[in-house]
Image (cartoon, rainbow, N blue to C red):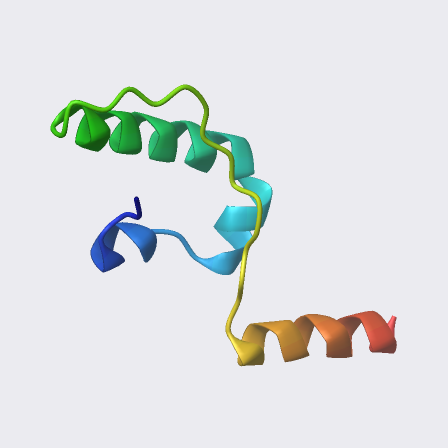
Amino acid sequence: MGLDYEERSQFDAIELITQRTLISQRNNELLTERAAQFGLLLDDISITHLNFRLEFTSAVELKQVAQ
């Protein structure tokens, strides 16, 4: 079960990294509420993998090389 695109795009890449716990809690609340509409009970939700745009990934790699 995924979030709608608009909800997925609320956070930028830096926020996803630096505020992972807060975002995870927010996603947990939203998904739990949405699942309840279908009679589902969610036990545990984890952010296990993040993908970023190629431009962001390239910029991070360039910065690491420069350092």
